[in-house]
Image 1: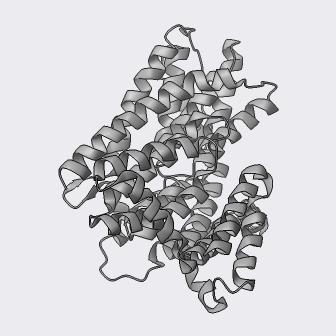
Image 2: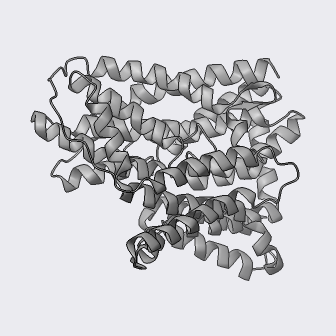
Length: 424
C-alpha cells in the first residue's frame, strides 16, 4: 500500500505544481500504476468510467455547435435590452450565465457570455472586470445544479448511478438543483449589494442574428433525452454517454450537409477539450490502482477517526475541507479521488452516502470560486480580460468571490443537512 500511496501523493503534488501538464502527469502515473503491477492490466479498461467520458465528449461537441450558432449571444442581447442600468446588466448576465451553465460546461458558458459583458463595459466606458468575474463565479455555482452542469456533477452521477431527474427530485426530497437555486438567490443578493453604486444607463439596440437554430434544438434534446433516459429501468451503464455522443454526431452531419463542406467535422472534433478527457481517463486508472492497493479504505478510516461516529461532524468536515482544497486545486481530480473515499466512509458508519455525496459536490464545485485559480471558468474569464487589456488583481477577484461563495455554500450547508441529514 505504501508505494501506491507515495505514487498517488507525488501525482497530486505534480498536478498542483504543473497545472499546464496535469493531464500528462496523470497519464504517466496511470502507466506506472499498471507497469508496477499495482493495477492489473486486465482491469484498466474497467477502471475507466466510459459513460462519464462519453457524456463529456458528446456535450462538448454539441456546445461547440451551439456557440457557433450565435444563439447564446442573441439571448444575452435580449436580456440586456430589458435592464435599466449597469448594475442590473451585471446581475442579469451573471444569472443568465448561471442558467446556461446548469446545462452547458462552465468554461463554454464563460466563452459565450463574457464577451457580451466586455462589449457593454466599453459602451459605458467602465471596467469589465467585475462583470466578467460575476459571470465566471455564477457559472461555477450552477455547475452543481444538474447532471450535465459540470464535470464534477457528471462524475457524481456516474459513480452514484444518479440520473438527470435525481438532481431535481430524489427519494422524495428536493435534489441539488433546488439547493443550488436557493444558494444562487443568496449569492445574487450579495452581488446586488456590491454593485449598488453602478447605475450607469444602458442604451443598446443590437441583437445578434441567428441563422441556424438546429444546435439549440440539439441542446434541448440532450437535456430532454437525459431526463427520459432516467426513467428507463436496467438501462446499459453507458446510456447517457451514448445519447450525448449520438446527438453530437447528428449535429456534425447536419452542419456538414447544411454548409456543404466537411470543415465543420474537423472544427467540432478539434474544439473538444482532450486535455480534460485524458486527465479524467488517467485519473480513473490511478484511482483504480489506489483502490486495488487499499489506499481508499485507509483514507476513509482516517476521516472516520477524525469525525468519529457523528454524521453531522463528518458532513461538516467533508464539505468545508472540500471548499478549502478546491480553492487551490482543480476540483475534477479532487472529486474523482474523493467519491470512493466518501462511499467508504458512509459504509464504515453504516449510513446512506447521499448527504456526504452532496456535501462533497457542493464544497468542491463552489469552493473553486474562492480564488482566481480555483476553477477553469475563473481562469478562462481572467484570460478573456487579459486579451482585452485588463489585468485582474487578486483583491479585485476576492472582493466578489469570497462573499458570493460563502453565502452560497452556507445556504447549501444548512439546507443539505436539513433535507438529507435530519430527515434521512
